Image (cartoon, rainbow, N blue to C red; front, top):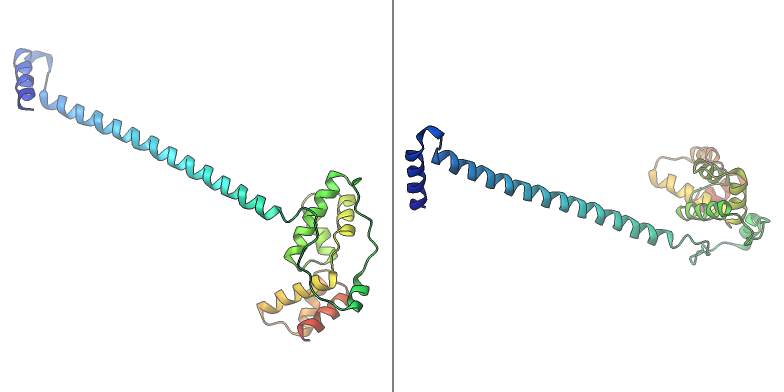
Length: 196
């Protein structure tokens, strides 16, 4: 280092009018090195951010695929016990699901079943939700007719969710379930099941 300083001083002494300054040259080298290091750090930071984003997107895709794997139209393996009387009350005449269903009808049915798994949907609220999702009326009708919903149990699920919030009298719970689109029979069934 001392030899370099001596050489820089000699250059300055030999060429005083050319503006050679050894301290300026050293400062310039330090600045250039710092800029190069900063550029490397920024590249590394960008790469890290890109990898994080890609990782998050992959994770979302995997979780979505796992979550959708149960929505393939197969019947749910967990069933709620119910009396024969309830089964008779809720049995509807449904169109048989056939391979002749359009893609839109099949997708509406898958979406309907996924909402029903969450619980608490009346037939009316399910139709409204599918309409909001952009399905056509014929696709919605197909889905609702073929989703094998137990509307009484859906009403019980909704009633239980309201009760868990607290502060519902029998009358206010009845009115809320009516607002949600459940029938009187479904509401009465649910009120009895939750203890009113």
